[in-house]
Image 1 (tube, rainbow, N blue to C red):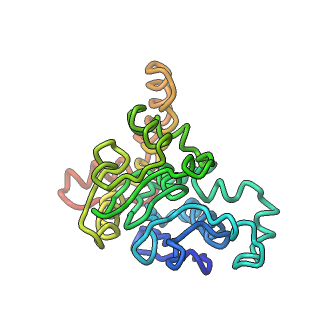
Image 2 (tube, rainbow, N blue to C red):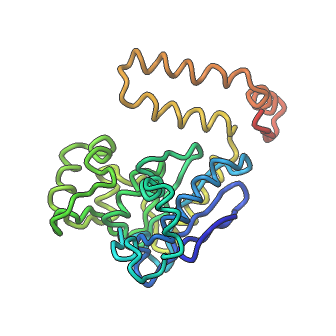
Image 3 (cartoon, rainbow, N blue to C red):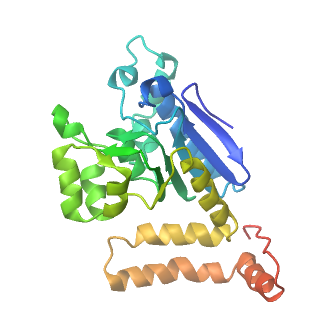
Length: 266
């Protein structure tokens, strides 16, 4: 497994857990953290034994956004990763899920601050769990900046436009309860239990057919901006091959035999 000094990688069964690990800076996005995220997404994509990914933060926070000084590498931690960014100038956007969509489901487990770039990364995840005291928000306009991690495009597609525009244009913080009310997160749980809930959801996903799960996720995103007619056609093209897999036959057989299925990605 990979990882860097600011990003830890662990396996919990079939789930890969990526932990942003820079608690002294509320897990602000440094170059080592971005490199670790980028490599973590690629590891999840490449390893067929991994069926889901959980993204979380260390020290009671998710992510407080971009650390511009650390990204510039001006004498701060991360200089030894500069060659990675030079070789792939798009690396930071892939790390933040702006220019990369993992094929496995990604579940966010949010405690504490999830603001600015943290809220932007959140929009690239599939399922979101927040602790009761978590804080969300896109603060960029308050600093005269632009939320260029994808929020002006993604947020109005994920929550009602009036709420998206309020979040984008006011730069104010949102509580977990508010985030849930507008649909930005799906679960609000007691503080300290977001990771447990995310792993519970991951376990439910892991028990399903992996080929089916990945095809369903792909279909949802592929058809999001299509007309209904085109979307239904694309769904058939993506979905029908799943019925011809050995896993599909195993699912039906296990149901008939009243036992848990054993899926083999075949």
